[in-house]
Image: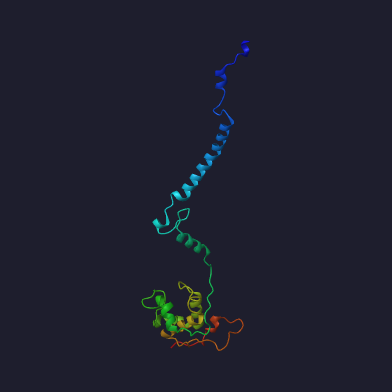
Length: 204
C-alpha cells in the first residue's frame, strides 16, 4: 500500500518548463527565429553600418573601403597593353639632321653635353670618329656604343638618325652627303639602316 502512494513534489521536480504542446511549438519557433534575426542584423551592420555615405566622402566606397576611382585605376593598370604598334606615314617629309640633333642628340653632343661624347663643331673630337666612316658612325648611333644608348626605334626612323649623324660629323669636319629616301623599295635583305647609308665622304 505504501508503495502506491504518489509523491507530487517529486513528479513536479522532474518536469521541465515546457508543460504542453503549445509551449513546445513556441520554443521551437523562437529557437529558429532568434539566430536568423541575429545574423540579419550582423550582415546589415557590416554592409552599411561602418561605411561612409557617398555624399560625405564625395565618392562611393566599395565594401572594402576602396574608392571606385582607385579600383578603376588598378584595373586599368592590370589590363593595360604590353606593347603598341605605331603606324607612321611613309610619305611624310623626313626631319632634317639639325631637327633630329636638337630633339634627340643635343643633350649629350651639344654644349656643355657630357664629357665622353664628341661635342658639336669640335673637330678634334670628331676627327678620329670621322675616319671610321659614316657606316660605322651610323651603326654606333642606331645600336649604341660604349655609354651611348641605342637611338634607333625612337621618335625618328633610321634614315633621320643618319641625317643627324651627318649633320654632327659635317660640323666636325666631314663631307658626308645627306642621306635621302631611296628611289625604290629596298632590295631583298636590305634594311632601313642600309637605305640610310649615303656614299662615303672624306674628311675636310
